[in-house]
Image 1 (spheres, protein in one colour):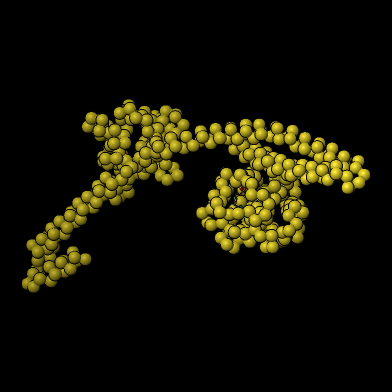
Image 2 (cartoon, rainbow, N blue to C red):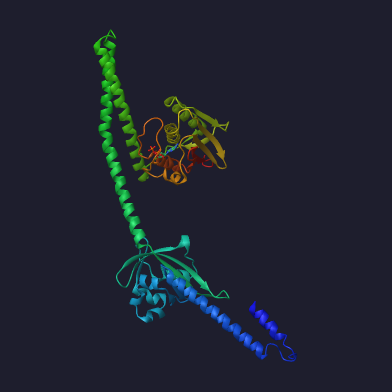
Amino acid sequence: MAMESDLQQTISLPGEANTSPLTHPGVISVVHNEQYRLEQELEERVRQLEGIFEAMTDGLIVYDREGRVLQTNTAAERLLAMNNQNISYYQRSVRERAPFYTVRDEHGQLLTAEQGPVMRVLKGEKLTSENAMDIQVSTPDGREIQLSVNCSPLHDQTGQFVGAVCIYHDVTERRANELALRVANQRMDEFLSMASHELRTPLTTIKASIQLARRRVASSLQEIVSENDTQYSKLVEMQAILDRAERQVNMQNRLIDDLLEVSRIQAHKLTLHLKECDLATIVREAVEDQRATMPHHTIQLELSVTEPVMLSVDADRIQQVLTNYLTNACKYSPADHPIVVRLQVKGEYICVCVHDEGPGLPPEEQAQVWERFYRVQGIEAKNGSTVGLGLGLPICRAIIEQHQGQVGVESTPGIGSTFWFALPLTGK
Ligand code: ADP
């Protein structure tokens, strides 16, 4: 703007009609001023950019089209120990620099200079965001580092390829933590698998013994003629004790089953027995079973389909998922608030929802409940056992995902929750 108005003023100078305005001394001075201003602006921009480069914690290197280093920031020099090199390092091409570093891919496979990120981008590839390249580097000062490298080609104003810019993000610590976590998880899975097998064996014997004792008590009761016999009341009391013991053993068995199931899932050993089944029938049966187990709850069923919904699924597993949703709904919501089960087609999916008027879940908990061993603090079971390991929902998710489906929950604290799963109709 300043340039245009200065120029107009100069052109309209009186008595200068025969002189070309562009050769007029006033014009030359304006042009010089303008050039000076642009240079100043340019210098300012360069200073700003240098400031940004230096403030970056990631290493940044600008290369020319041969892969020679044009510019670096301090972070790059520190990360790659570039100050260990003599100055001619900067004039060397990528291939000539290769002996200074040993570079491997994320699996530890040695990379040649051609396979490294700089050469790849100089040959026209773009290594950004999801294409970022993970490498392991042995630096000249003897460090082993892991880098995530983003590289983009650089072009001049005319679109000519002039080089590349690479950003080196140090992920050494993150990768070490990930590895430690993987190892710890693997150890825990091995332990769970072993512990649940070991726990189950004596429990099977205990359960068999309880059942035998119950049968003996029942037959002794039949032999007693009068209910007034003192033996009779003792045997009835014993029967109640054995009933309680069996219930506890069943609960223990369920927890161990969950542990075993989760070990199988972690080891990718969860097998499905797929068969063409009607999903509406599976849902109806699961609801009827739950009504029988929890007679105090009202469970409404809304099937928005009239025809059978034939899908290739493992019926027992799908029923297991729905039963888990229903058990949780009954467990966490008051008995006088209805639970509604819906079956509806949504696009290419058939969706089963279980809605309750329980405590609901805050948004941050809604994703967490699908993680292993996660239990929401401060939510009390209204009915049934409070015992749980936080494994039911992760098992549901694994089962549904193995059917190529999806799970989810929509919930408002204080209002209620809708746990759902969706199975693809296309796979039927
Ligand atoms: P658990 O067997 O311990 O109940 P789940 O994996 O089935 O484990 O559930 C994980 C947690 O999610 C539960 O401990 C509970 O806090 C929460 N939760 C599950 N279902 C509901 C529900 N319908 N309403 C409120 N909270 C729920």
